[in-house]
Length: 324
Image 1 (tube, rainbow, N blue to C red):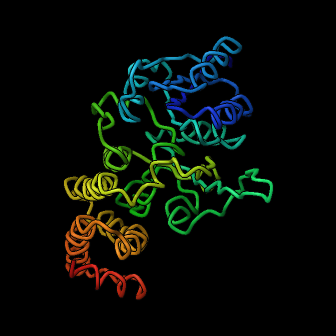
Image 2 (cartoon, rainbow, N blue to C red):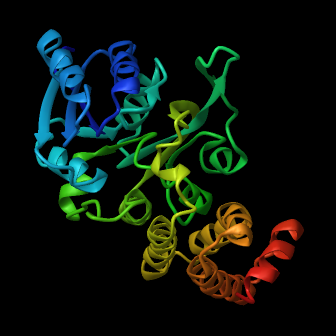
């Protein structure tokens, strides 16, 4: 079989130090029958050249360029309109696919006929040597990731497996392009953390979902601290982050997925919120504490109404934040 079966959408802006490794991880796939749409989102560094060289050397790569940066959501949407294969996946241009990622995901969804297949992921964390050089070390599968994907389930649903709602990233999944087009799924534009609401909509709309415990993506924490997820101390980033968390739960509520919504609220309060509280305790801007305090009051009230038991350490930390 030589016809491409899956398109991988790879958005990137100013990711020259990492893009070649991302593209190498595609070239190394044990499943060779893929396409990749590389979306250069207004890069000002060598990303543009790296993407174009890849396309010149390998016909499986196609390059699209935004003259000015429009953000990850818009970059992914641009590529979604060009997908011609039955399946679609995503890879950020500073991350890496594991060698059997596409074979595992495509093989599973092909066997089951499900709309969506979800895999695990790990962090690549930087370590700086005495000479200033940086190496990246692969971490473990975190508990909330394992809860979403382990053990393997085929043909399940959000109602049967509400913990899958904890996997909110765009990547580490392959889905049917028909799912996107049937329901008009698009990424929000002009917002950070744009994948959270989309992930919950996919879970709620999918006729069947597969989950596999295999590590699909190595998610890079950049040594220079330039990743969006490394800037949660900025008030505008916090605002988009909290809006995304609220939006994801709202999608589950609207779909009458009460168990999944409760699972998501518990995970947000136990995992996402405590690090933000620690940042807020030392933050110079009171607006940060006010925004976070409002969010904590809202979500802890929801947890109490749903009878959710939080980790004692998290509950203690959040108690002070409720007063902000």
